[in-house]
Picture (cartoon, rainbow, N blue to C red):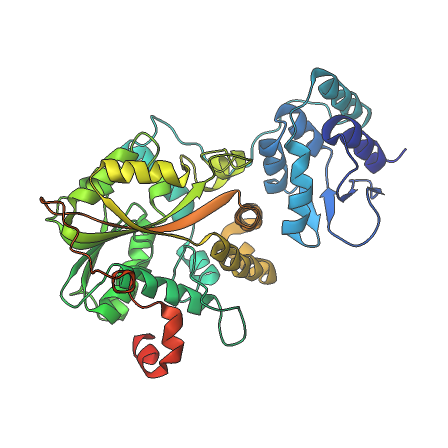
Length: 442
């Protein structure tokens, strides 16, 4: 019996309890699994089995993929979607013994393999100032050149707002512009207003709001590399008198209240225990009648998406210490801080349409990406983006824009009477008035 056949038999009988959903190709060149077209899982080294014996499930699979011992031939997202089920089912003692016997026959037994070098190794208590800086640095300080290669020219590293289908005339850059415009309109930004952006990234929202809405903006980030590139972009656009970017923790912001506050996909990083502190700080930095726009990822209250950190791979390689909760729990925290929820807008499927172009860029320009970040990090990003696209597509993760307001001492919101006036014109309607739209385009 070939190596691939032995592994397939073991997986079908003792791991999946069902036929193998995808073909596998073992290190000896043998192939097993369902015939026909489709991706092939490459088991390049017997160390894959050893990793799975020591760390069954997602972490063992992720380490094998990042180390280059496990690969995918064909569509990586489809291949991973099928093969990831191998690590999803808990094993009985009999199943584990059967897997151990198969590994022994194939010469795969041995000491625990060392984790790949790119695995996060944070120290200290979660969500202290120092550990939060280390967690953010692990992902965001990777390489400015790499993020410039991967992202759109605005450097928006968050879910876009796709107002129409992708085409030659409309793509990722347009969707990110429409997202930035949507945020500015929901915040009702006007010339002369002061905006605080908590977790400002490479300044995409700061620059858009200052350029097209005439605000004075302050952004805070824990990523030194983000700040360096953000400041460079601000200087190149001549916005130094309108945009300030600080290397600062959100808990350290002591400015007087702002007219508007935004925080785009940063709330996931503050932790469960610290989220009330985060919500209270956002409230305190907002003047009465001021608006807050949060864009934040979530997990469901039931079903498969129950890992607050996104699963072993995300927690170990991409976003250590991240915590996602069901939307309702987040709203409870924000309302407890004194904020009033005005609107909740789901963008879950928009994230599928956003991540796919990032993944295409990575795969279509593999040699350039590897030159920027190395082969191991390249595999981390392949797995990260393919997995993210699947998680949003399969409704295991969500993302929402949450618009809130700080009422005044008498409980008044100061909002317009109509919903349309409160939320502003949708960017999609600009295409019906092209001259106005062109004025807003960079």
